[in-house]
Each structure stands twice: as structure tokens, then as C-alpha cells.
Image (spheres, rainbow, N blue to C red):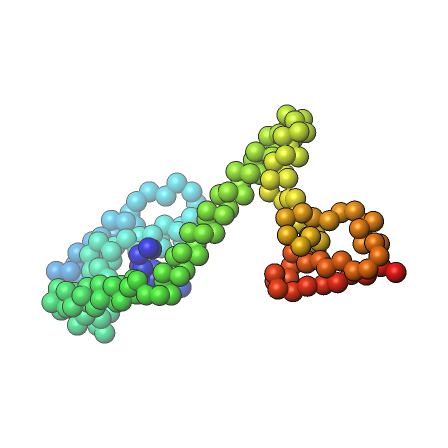
Length: 202
């Protein structure tokens, strides 16, 4: 029986993170931020193109706040992360209860499991037979090829039963018997023993 797992949530896009500019109100952090910006901007530039200068400025203004003031946290999620340790057991209990309920061996699950097993066994049997027939075809062994094919697909039986005598042990195949004078009581193999049929030939 398969184990039900919670669906994996993938964000549609990468969320945009913002720097915590409120930390610049602290004089020490503001001074450290300015010094970091000067250090990154003072790095030598290998190329003199405008694109390279812009890339250098962008990288410097990005690395400096990362190293000093950091990113801001979403205030609407602070309550969740602050009490996550206390509510995580409750969430885990709820998840396990739901998984147990979904994985219960109900009649529907048993029927689906049985049907799946039968289909897998049938597919395996057909694959083995197909491989066996293909091997005979590759070896040009026509006798084994037709014998194996006959085992799978035939011979088919006719839906019309043969005519038997009164004892029901002998099948009548001679047409001259039907043309004798008078009547002959016969019984077909497809009718009950008490049913009689009289065939007369003129």
C-alpha cells in the first residue's frame, strides 16, 4: 500500500527580499555600512566599459548591505516562527492523523489494490509470452512459433453443439442416418436431457 505524502509546495516565483534599512538608525551600523561601501567601490576595475562600471556599482551596493544591515523579516509571519516550536507537535499530530485516515484499508482501497495486482500479473504474463514468441521468430522456428501462438489464441470452439444418439455417448456424423424412413429422436448437446427433438427427412 502506498504511503500518502503531503504535496510539495513550490513557489511560483522567487520572493523579493528587502534590506532592513531601519538598522541604519544605529550609528555604529551606519558607519560600518559606509565603510563597507567605500571598500567595495575602491576595488580596481579591469574594463572601462559602461556596462562593467554599472555591474561593479550594483554588486558593491548589494554586497555592502548584506554584510552590514541584513535583510528584513516579514512582520506578518513573525508570530508563526516565534511559536513554531510550541505548535510544531500539534501540526505533526494533525498530519499523521490525516495520513492514517487516508491510508486505511477500506473496501475501495482493497479492490483497487487487487485490480492493480491482477493487471500487473497479466502484463507480466503477456510480456513473457511475447518475448518467447519473438525468440522463436528470430530463430525461424516456425513449429514452436505456431504451437505457442495456438496455445494463446486457439483453437476456438464452435458455439453449435454436435448431434448425439439416445445414450448421449456417440456423436452422429453420418448424414444417411437422417434420411432413414420414419423418425429419429435425437438430443442436442446444448439442451437438457429431458428435451427431445424429432428430425424427419422426406
